[in-house]
Length: 241
Ligand SMILES: [Zn+2]
Image 1 (cartoon, helix red, strand yellow):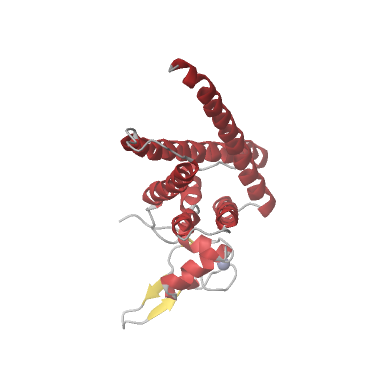
Image 2 (cartoon, rainbow, N blue to C red):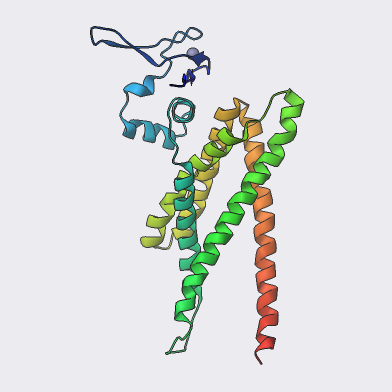
């Protein structure tokens, strides 16, 4: 069995174990040699408490999840979050479309809009990740450290869990829904910032800069695609007249 490497959630010092199991059935939590605090106090906590601390963006909770657990649901979570985002965009698209055709012969094709929105959301997420990496990549040369892609990508995808909130925000639609969407977006970006900070053990300024870089690139690509879509709508009707 492979030896697991843990990290202290207070000072990020490496640790070989989180607790010690004595022969008489007594479990004792491991104390960090560097900071003299428990290596990972969250192993005794209820998952709900850990989730609440993660929602509050506590860095110790992020370290516990990213370093001391074997959560491998990031791809499934990513697809689910993309579905949530696609549903939001699709519902807004449906709300903006006014059709007077009673037959509505292209009704079935509207489902393709959903897949289109899913692809668009996936593309924007990929561009966002590329933007984050584009900022962080030169930094590794600057500080002489190596950037490990897999943990960083996992941290980014896991910290997007806030997008799940889009579903209730769409279902219980009200006048403040646009504000809710912006707050959810802000929450996801804050979680991303904290996740990058934990994985790279870097300053808050650098992680904010990386997220800003990703957001900037994503916005540019999103705006370009939107303009391209508008231009295609300008030209396409001429083909059918
Ligand atoms: Zn420590």
